[in-house]
Image (cartoon, rainbow, N blue to C red; front, side, top):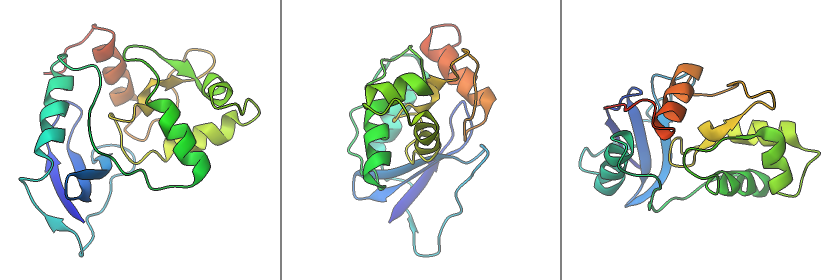
Length: 160
């Protein structure tokens, strides 16, 4: 596995993967930073395309990503994560709505758990899922970063 870190308006991001395939994007200033493993190799030239797309996103010039990803998880988790990628830029849905979209309306809590285990933050937009009452709840990157990402996508706040 190779990794690099990039500075962003929401703090340091750790990019992890193999070749050009992204396996993880973690907010190192969030609630659950990832510890670099001794077996990983740092390569600050890695993931140039991902870094470019993130720069464009934070500048408000990109609304979707075209990144090779490998999402490692169980079948249910991968179903939830795929459904996240179908939430349009600038929109939010509730955990219950996400559960309905994957044909499992009885599993809103499990959807929330899978959402919280998303290994590729920002690009797989788990920040677009909010509580049924419209409030911002549960975000591994911290609620301030969730709010900032949603404000960026609504055109309220440019992050760069």
